[in-house]
Image 1 (cartoon, rainbow, N blue to C red):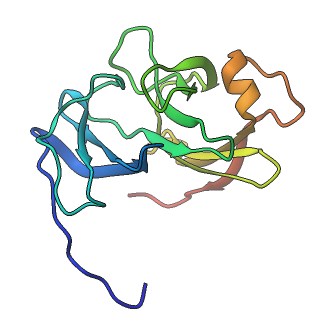
Image 2 (image 1 turned 30 degrees about the vertical axis):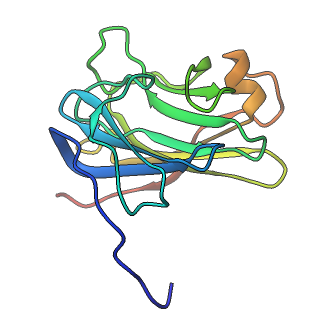
Length: 179
């Protein structure tokens, strides 16, 4: 991180908040996923980020418009996607974890991490032992909580807790002041 070099840039139509996530596909292609006004946009680079394909609506990742999602490669080589999966298709609720075993072409499982309205901005890491730690906020204008959920890839694939790692809604912090 001592020096940086500009390589290139991509343009994904109707992006919002410029929230990009990039994962390296198994063939070395960089896959950029972007929060947009229509859900998720995507662009690809085959030269380590110097040039990018024309941005478009993602063909394999669907999500509600104007909301952040999270994606990362797991220790197993599979991909984890955490996104809203509300019954109405538009509410920031039902924060859910999915797994792709085919490099993002299809998504399986569907472990609901928190079904309440007002959950947003997921992010996370995976420990060496396989436990996933997802942090997110809840009710930013009311309770103003930062929460965490722990689980495993197996839990997400099963769509329900099947391991001892499952621990939902752990309070990490809570704002006490007014905005």
